[in-house]
Amino acid sequence: MPPAPPRTLVTGCAGFIGFHLATRLLRDGHEVFGLDSLDDPTEPPLQRARLLRLEGTAGFSFAQASVTDSDALRRLLEEARPGSVVHLAARVGVRASMVNPRAYSETNLVGFGNVLEACARVGIRHLVYASSSSVYGANRKVPFSEDDPVDHPVSYYAATKRANELQAHAFSHLYRLPTTGLRFFTVYGPFGRPDMAPILFARAILRGEAIRLFNGGRMQRDFTYVDDVVESVVRVLDRLPEGTGAEAPARILNVGSARPVELDEFVTALESHLGGKADRVLLPMQPGDLVATWADTRRLEALTGFSPRTALDEGLRRMAEWLLAFDRPVRT
View 1: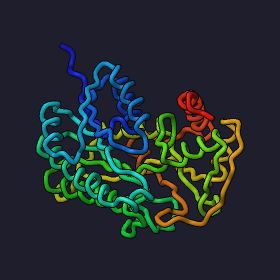
View 2: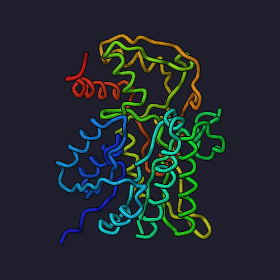
View 3: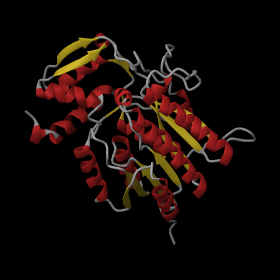
View 4: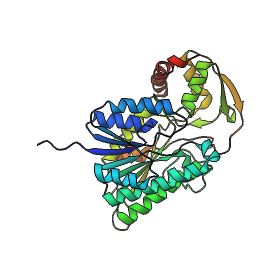
C-alpha cells in the first residue's frame, strides 16, 4: 500500500500567501486542510476568487473559522491530524493597526496563542508561522539580520509579530514544539493584497488616480515575489529546528529578495508593464513606516539551498498580466 500523502493545515488559506502556498502543496501531492475566517474587509472578492480555485482541487478541505475560536481550532486539528501547520492567518498592515489595535490583539496575539496551544496538544511535527520584516522597527543597520536586536517596534502590527516570535519560543521551550518563524519582506504577485503598495499602485496607474509616495518616493522595500516565498516555506517545512538540551527547537528566518528598491523606481517599472503613467504625489514620512527594508537571507540559503531569486521586472510582468485580466470588468 502506498504511503498516505502528507497532511498540512494552512491557516489564512484564502489570503494572498496562504492561497499560493495551498495551491503549491496540493500540486506536490499534499492533503491540505484550509482554515480562514473570510472576514478581511479589504479583499472579499479576492478571498472568494482564491477559495473558489482551491475548492475545485482534489485533496483540499476547508473550514470557515477564526483562530480566535480555540474550540473550533482544536477540533479541526484533532480531526485532521496534520503533520505540519503553516500559520498565516493574521491582521496585517501597519497603518490599520493604528486604527483598530484591538483587532490585532485578538487575532495576532490571542489567536496565535490558540494555534500554539492546539499544536502542542495534538503533537504537531512542525509549526511554521508568518512573522514580518516590520519587527526590525527603528533599526538602521542594513541588511537586516536575524541576529539584530528587535526591541523597538514602530507600529503595533510589528509589536504583535515580535510578540508571536516570543510566544513561539516559549512553547518550543516548554513543550518541545518545533517552530519556525518567517520574517516576510514585502511580498507581491498575482492575487496580491489590495491594501499593499504593489496592487494599490498598479490599480492607481490603470485608473488614472494619484499615487502617494511617502518620504518623497525614497522609501526602499525588499520586494519578494510570492512564488519565491512559497518555495521558501515548502523547503523549510521539511527542515525541523532541533534544539538540544536547554535550547528550544525554535528559529527565525528572513525571507526576502536581498535587493531593496526605491518606491519611485518600482512605480516606473510598473508603468512600463501597465502602459500608463503614474500621477505621483510626494509626501513626508508616515508614522509607523520604515525608511528601508533589506533582508539578509544567508541563513535561509544555508538551511534550504534556496534564496528568493525572481527578478523584479519578471515578477511585475506576471503580476500586471494577472491584474489586467482580473480587473478587466471594472476598469475605467
